[in-house]
Length: 457
Image (tube, rainbow, N blue to C red; front, side):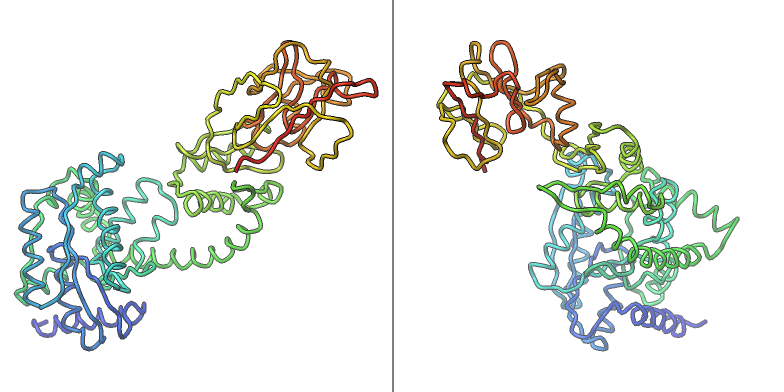
């Protein structure tokens, strides 16, 4: 095949791919992610050549990662290309090593996160409706293999999306060798990233050491085969998601700021459905990376007794309650121990609590407020956290009961927030829930105290 025929074949292949996946529409304003390497230079030149055909406007963005001594020259090279083509060029510097260290990420993850963050910021600021990145067929194969090796699940081995939100990947149908051959034949310069030849990075090790062996011993068209398989899987997942979303909203709801998973129906679902519902709660609702361990821990919690809980991040915990799982923000149990003066008010755990003198005949419509017999109090009044081993005699009962058992039986959702009012001898009230039978009022009661609770928000 001569040079002209090769160029035409490559370009027609791309035009067909863009049309098949509806990546570009007339009037699009596209921001291209330009590193200066072969893939992004190819993408820039192709879109520039066909910008009138597609009736699009173009600009480029370059992120200087400050990782290599050549980083500044790559930045200048990218700027020169855009200057020659008279295309708008945007650039910024970010210290990827510092970002990686602060966020406990690998250099590769940190670079990717920062790049997409900056691309979206510039696209929003300058009204680009699409962002084009230069991922190729080999990139997709490497991503699928890496995720498969790491056991990241079905979604991760469905490959790099050809289109996701406003991000498009128009050259995903080409291999690296096709791209570089096109650039050589057309004498288009690009920069070589020497770090790509180092196998200290996971992706480079896979590309340099493992993929060549797979190509030699198993499949010369490895990237194409993986692409076809990953797209078939992607299609299955799209169908699966339509089924999943219906079940999701039947099983998951928002109550008092917490996410609630209804277990009665959850038990009846297939294990894959259960896993995917939890994955969606973590990723979409709580913005937590749904690792295999976290998902397994939550599934195990389903089988444990009421009251058990696990921490799934610095911010969130999951509590096993009767017939449900509660995903709630972790509130470290604040130590509360307050000596109460009758008539004063106290702001505790978003509640306003007071103990006031009262009369039996006073009308009170708040069911959380409680009247007790003031003459049955011994010594000081204290508001404190309930603790393991606390017992009281719930109103109407003869024998004592553990506060923890009372809260479980009463289906109290967040036990950590519950406080008790005590005197020097006993618990007078599990505040807002039940007074002790020993301080209940009677016809003989002469002095009344009202325990009053208001929302502090």
